[in-house]
Length: 516
Image 1 (spheres, rainbow, N blue to C red):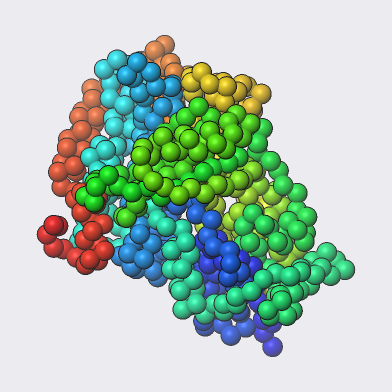
Image 2: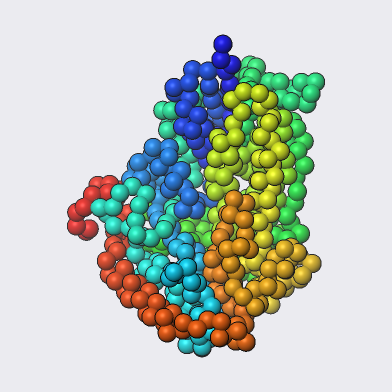
């Protein structure tokens, strides 16, 4: 007789319902009577809403789950995201001068495998275009408030790479509906106690509303509370605070200046004296938040910075506290943590959802249909710990290159706060651009070109002057740079306005008809 497997997910929100829907689809529980997935969700605790932006990987995930893109956009107040515009990170504003750069989702153009980065570095610094604008068309498309696709194009497809901004609570609702369509059982209730057996594994969950609940595999999606992995199993938490200083945020929803105001198709990340502000354009309002270090400013100062940023708008704020870090063992015995219970670094670069996607894809791939349910734990822990550590390196890069004078920023450039791996890479990159062999793809969230966008957006000096003769095709590179400019000119004319496309999708879906 075939042995059954049951999964109990503790917690809803984006982590719980994405995990449930993904595993239900991947494991085909609707066709497998011996497999079951149950979500135990507290009715009082909703989505925390810190990460209202995603990576382009979310498109593959939603498509895999069978969720219609237009429905997703309508039901989550979603808009398109083509990257991040960083403002005031390189240096503080002053004397009418402000610095900004763009981190697009598109990889740089190349020809015959030849990178344009060295040829850009060899151009005159005073006259060359910003790096992202020189090597992609996306920077200019996004700055023109254009969408990354046209209304007649199929779900999750378009000429430019993109992700979304969305309402996190509404996303959880969409995922919950899809998970239950796929056969997931939903229980509303609380965790009263997690009882361990003599081996230290979870024997059962005791819920005041549902009594004793048992499963073969318990998945902790209970957020920062970490009901199972933290409270019951005492998995150690590795703090990243010595590297990433931010530990708090204050957030609000801010109205647009006017109903037809352009919606930016990128996150705006604006540095301030002790952190940065996010500004996310949804279809009905902007999500704005001030991320900061409580070691450098207090809560009242952070709220003042936020309110000054949104101008005279009357807004209701909410405060969030977190500690950057992760659990080195996220899978212990018959319990695995996904989402905030496993770790959280900070909102910068929107890594929250992509870490959920990475974890649940591994659980599905490594899922032990027979034998010990703990069999994949060691490999899972190694891969997830490496991914967290590599994200920490990438996030620190943004801070370590700043030339701002405030104490927060000065301390971020202290070598004692910069991971050794990043210091080694920065030393190498003084003489060559980041390359694909600097990174092991399966352990990374960011590719070598993501590092290029941050380095050269921030003005990092890679000196190739002594080796200029190693790059002999300057004329060919100049033609390609010109071609990219031409493509960008055409794209900004051909692609619809971002707000116009979102309005059409909300009214008609993806249909080929004239935009209003």
